[in-house]
Amino acid sequence: MRSRSFLLAREKSKREYNMKKKRSVRYYKDIWKWTGAMMALPGIVMIALFIIVPFFMNVGYAFTDYNTASDVPNFIGFANFKTMFNDRDFWLVCTNTLKLILTYVLGGNILAILLGVMITNVNRKYGNFVKTAIYFPQLLSMVVVGFLWRIIFSYNNGPVNHFLEWIGVPPDLLPQWLGIPALIIPSISVALIWLISGYYSIIYHAGMMSIPMSYYEVSAIEGANRWQEFVHVTLPFLAPSITINTVLLTVESLSAFAVPASMTGGGGPGRYGTTLALWSYTTYFNNHQYGKAIAISVLLGVFAVILAFIELKILLKKEIGNA
Image (cartoon, rainbow, N blue to C red; front, side, top):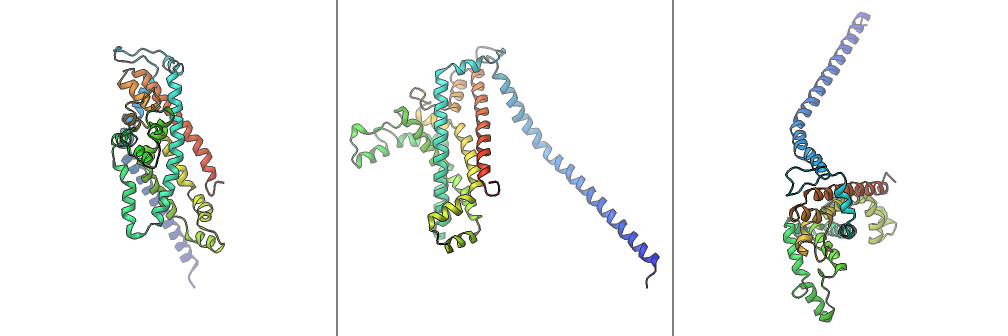
């Protein structure tokens, strides 16, 4: 039998070894923590200098009368916001923006889900071609897309009206898609949805590929058809993707100005094609009212944060595991 002193020495040796190992692990963790912080420092400095600091500087200019006629901005408090709220165009532009959000978010999600289903179930032989064709509009410039759809919706020479005339619609009943106030925002939404649907369909496709096949096998055993599988299996598992896409589409619709500007020639007629982002742009570059333009941008940012918070609050509760 081994002596008691030998066993005690071995236990002591084990304890010393474990203590050294713990100290070594803690040492390397500290090294990696500080190394990671130092590696992130240049990025943090760049973000602070070129995003955070300019953001707060711009917020400050929103409370001034800064324009081309004033060399030194003067503090005027909430005057820009009061002027904006008393402007009838402001409420029209807000209405246009809300209409765009509703049509763009709803239509973009629906089309992206349908395209995601098609990509998931397409024959492998033609899969790459279909994916490329769907994603192709995302590669185009927004200004090019705006002018393209301006031609498509043209009253005299547009393919849409030519098609309506071909199926029997009388010429005097052909709509002026970009001339009738009620049709301008839906027309802009169609162009934007066509532009972005391929990008968001990839997110839905990734979500569908992560759904375990066992759920579809069980639903098939239970006698569910394709529609029932989609409603009771696919959609619940796509809830995280729906949440992400809804928030992204909302923020993107709030920042849309290139497509509306090029489609409507600057937001007309009568500002019925103007969004908040486009109004801020024209106020800054065309009217040179910098303080007012920045006030519009600040309001737009607050609006985006509130909408995104509400959407996340509602949609996160619908996800599996959070319900």
